[in-house]
View: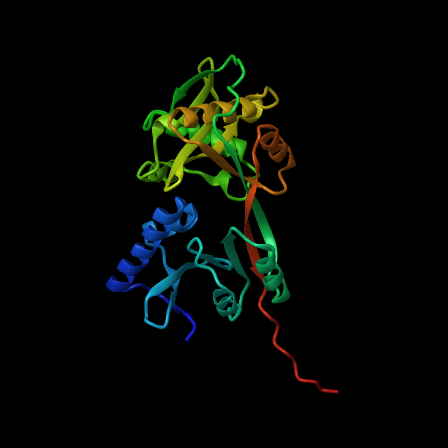
Length: 294
């Protein structure tokens, strides 16, 4: 008997424990977050979402997805637990559905395309080995982020730098402070760059602990619009890589929008290479078949 998906409006105590155990096992095995930050924030805030559960013939939980109800239905399976059964289940929704998949193979995209799913947004995961070339000389001064002191200034910088970004430009102090509680958060890896007293750029890094060694991530690089064109983006990435390498990471990764060609070109020039894709698919509801009245 094949594994099957069911959707529930809430999780009971035993189900919560099973989901938590599955997500923890995924993160320990892969070194990646089992869910993206937006979905984790929904769950931690207690927002109403639906939950898709996949169980094998013995009733063991083998897959999980969050289904958020907004203007559209937004679904995200836990890392590595997607199968086409989930996509087919979502096709029964009577409104537009989005489906966020990480590490998307071409065969998967082709099959989804045949069923009416289209790519809406694509991120590329890029990687390179460490150490990297050292950062060039710069006029900026560098220090780590100080929680409680730099919160408002960094949020302002971030939102100015990502004013037209589909998800990064709506940061708030509350959301930033929620990330202080994450197990990976380390203020020493949150690099702040000042021109005199003015914050002009930042490079937020994180470290993924895996069985094959630590992987450092260039998580968010922000450059003030007024300071762009001075090479600060390149400097911030290299300085962040130097910090990660000094901490013992032997590989680095980052994510970039497929359509952001300037950023993509910078990262390739710094030695990053394509590793995988994250794709958000969308599907409109199938219109009802009207009877033939001819």
